[in-house]
Length: 60
Image (cartoon, rainbow, N blue to C red; front, top):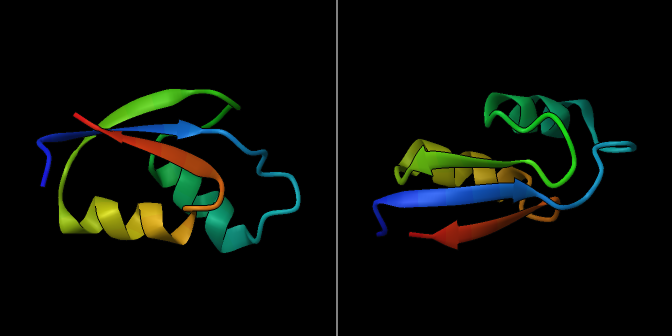
């Protein structure tokens, strides 16, 4: 596993299910094309998997 993950919201949350919206907010993603950095762990990987169709992930 990488040490850090850069997560970018690349698709809109309009029309997304409430659980997916909440997951994106929990990841710190509020606006389109916003990028946040998280430590690479199982919990973050699970959250990313839930909204994988909305985000782009870069391992650093």
